[in-house]
Image (cartoon, rainbow, N blue to C red; front, top):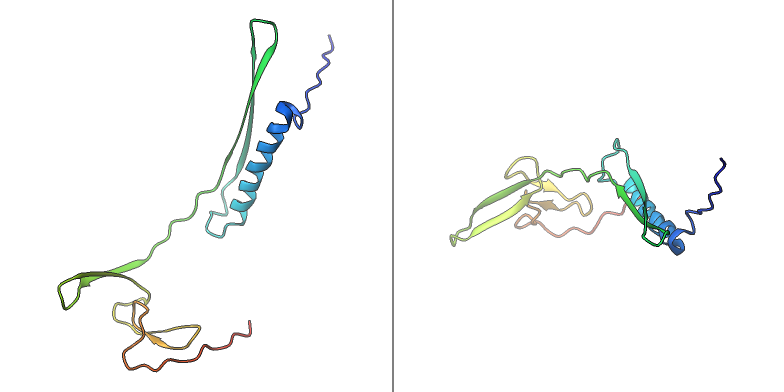
Length: 132
């Protein structure tokens, strides 16, 4: 017995299935280009079509399209926590590798504290032109 099946997935549900596939493919493409997503992880596109006979002899179909993306990588940083002279709690991200270490702003060349504030008495410096 030979079956004559004429179901075009591009036209199924008036094209809604194909539209959903394209939406999920766009999510996958963005995830593949995301520098914060893990490189060595498979991305998946899942298409599920369910068939259920109705009482009147027709078959109802339900479609579902989903994707599985690579997770974004965790980010680590150091935070300095303490009290200021007035007894108020302060919290800032530490930009240097060592607490109290002075750093140089790579764009302006200005000396900064470990939290990115200009060093007291340090003159403001014009930004350095980048030729890269």
